[in-house]
Image 1 (tube, rainbow, N blue to C red):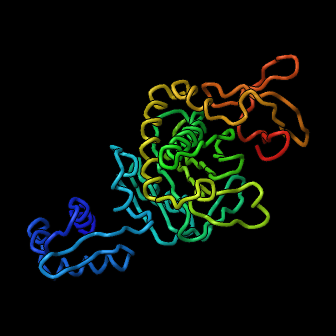
Image 2: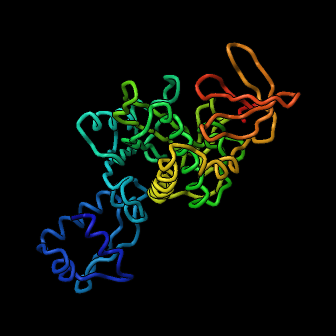
Image 3: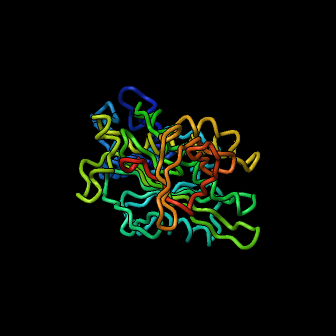
Length: 326
């Protein structure tokens, strides 16, 4: 009911009378008053004037279903959207929901995580109220060997969404970190439940530093936020919706061939180290190679000084720039 009330308030430039709301939603004036007060408690600024009705003046910067739905144009991804003020981990909740039969395209978002996770078991800092913490539950019909490519699909989608909403030139550090001005603004973690050639589900978690103003000293040299880079506050719901919209488009292109071939050009155009020398860290050894971009399987193609090509597989090595993070 709150969602319908918000839609009605947003559909008018001025006031909406209480009677109009009652007639449109088929509820009593007491029910309208109750929902208006609940919205105010959630941070919506709503002006109430006798004989005029109600007018929405300002919406909070929150990632609720009502706010994300405003700009959501998907058919499936995010249509089953679950938002929590606080949660242990959106990935863990998505996996719990998967075990209960939640549908493909379910999205779990939270304002704060108490046990956010990064790659290789690292924790992911998840303070309240300033960033995006969101996980996708997917049930793709494809071979298990192709599932890792989904990480690159979401990285591309998030990069496109950041550019659309903020105007920032958002690059990708292979395979799935997003960077603005050579600093990390986003991390992605993909987890899968499968047996042999059967995928039960894939959960992709994404954390985007949106309006964070400062970072712990140990990561401040390599981390930044969209707000710091753009100089303005970013609406998290608008950005979340853009990520979902771009992901559905790219996911459908990927699934038609179970290949990154349709997305390679777009991905490589955003790859920050393409054509540049990178440091490959493998089994305790460092090798200098030149990045040539990804192939249709998501492997990074690199060349040595003599021009010999090699595939670098995500998870087997770590890739760094010669002089720092990128």
